[in-house]
Length: 179
Image 1: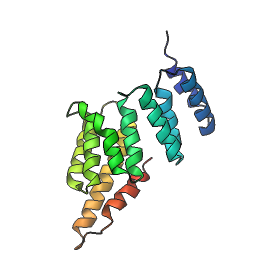
Image 2: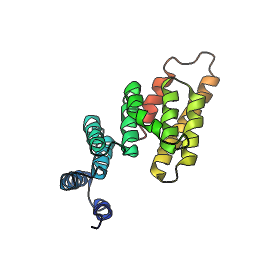
Image 3: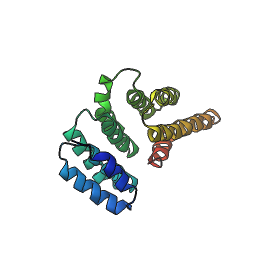
C-alpha cells in the first residue's frame, strides 16, 4: 500500500491555513493509526496561538503513537513556552530513553537547564543538539535562534552588576516568539 502522506504534504502547500487544518483533520480521521497529520495540525494551531488546541492535537498524536519523539518534543516546547516548565520536563521524560547523543534528548536537556537559569549549560546542550540533528532543519533553525537569544541574555547579565530578576521570564517570552 502506498503512503498517502507525501501527496498530503504536496496538497497542503497549495492551501491556506484554514484549508490545511481541515485537510489534515480529514487525514487524521481517515488514517486513525497515523499520528503524522495530528503533528501537523498541532503545529498549525501553535502557529496561530491556539495553544489549547495545539496541545490537544499533540497529545492525541502521542496517544496514537507514544514513541513519536518529535511530537513529544514539540508538545514539551509548547508547554515550556507557555510557562509550564515542569509539565514540559515531565512530557520530555520519555526522551531519556534515546541515546545520550540524540538531538532531541540534547535539546530536552538544554531546555531543562534553561528552566533553572543555567544558561551556559543550556546553550551548550542546545548547540550539541543542533550539531547532532541531521533530520530536521526547521527545528535546528528554531533551536539556533534560541541559542542566540540565550547568548545575548548571558552577555546582558554579564554586563549588569545585578542580574535582572526576570531574566528567565525574558527567555520564556523570547522562545514564545520562535513558533
